Each structure stands twice: as C-alpha cells, then as structure tokens.
Image (cartoon, rainbow, N blue to C red):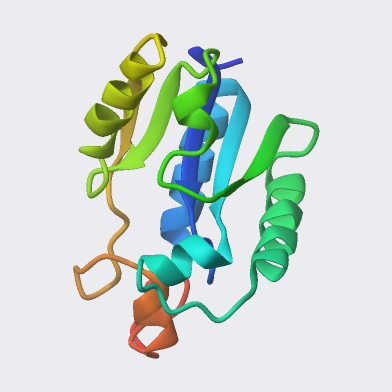
Length: 154
C-alpha cells in the first residue's frame, strides 16, 4: 500500500485540525508504515510554543485519532526531543511528509542523515489547508478563537 515502505512526519498536535488531518491522510496514503513524531513538552517549550495539552494528553488524542481514521494500519508515535527524531537516525525512512511551509526541513534532514551515512529521504509536500478567510489553519488561531478546527471563522 502506498509508494513508500516507511514515511515520517512530525508535529505538536496540540489542537488537532484539518491541516493535521491532511498531513496524516497523505502519510497513510503514501506508505504502509508511518512514523509520527510528536513534539515533547520540553521541545515545545524550547521553541516558544504555547500548548494547552501535555504530551501525554496529545499522545492519547493522536493515538485515538489514528486508530479511528486508519484502523489496522501500521504506525508508531515517537516522542520528539529534537527537530527530526527517528527520521534523522533510522535508515528505513523513505520520505518525509511536510507542508509547503516546512518543505525546507527536508534539505536540513538530508544533511543530518548524510552525516550518519544514511541515504536521502524524499519529500511529500502537502499543500497548506486554509481557513475560510484564506489564511492557514493553525492551533494558535484556534486557541485565539479566530477559527475552529475546520477553518470556519468564529
């Protein structure tokens, strides 16, 4: 199933929204095994992210979503304590699922992989999901009550 054996993707998944769903859909469409890097609380704090939910809460929500939306599919959720997690060190990752906003990260990841003697990964670029006002959907905008998780103006 899918073009790649293993793909990786990552995110904070604080408030799961349509943008996250688009990335997850692309990942499970592209591969038979998906590695999902979930930003740890310390990394989120170090990056200046304001999050509502703890790592454990986000892990539970993400796991429930994946089990419901992609039943029986092969995946692992890995705690991200740096920007790339398993994608930088595991040789069997074939592609990184990214948004058009984070596409540049593939080049950085491939440099890190080359330092470890690993092959390059390809990128699967998922277009940004826009809210009804034409700007991107984000957890920050949802927290600020500008939009809901589907991108509708509030």
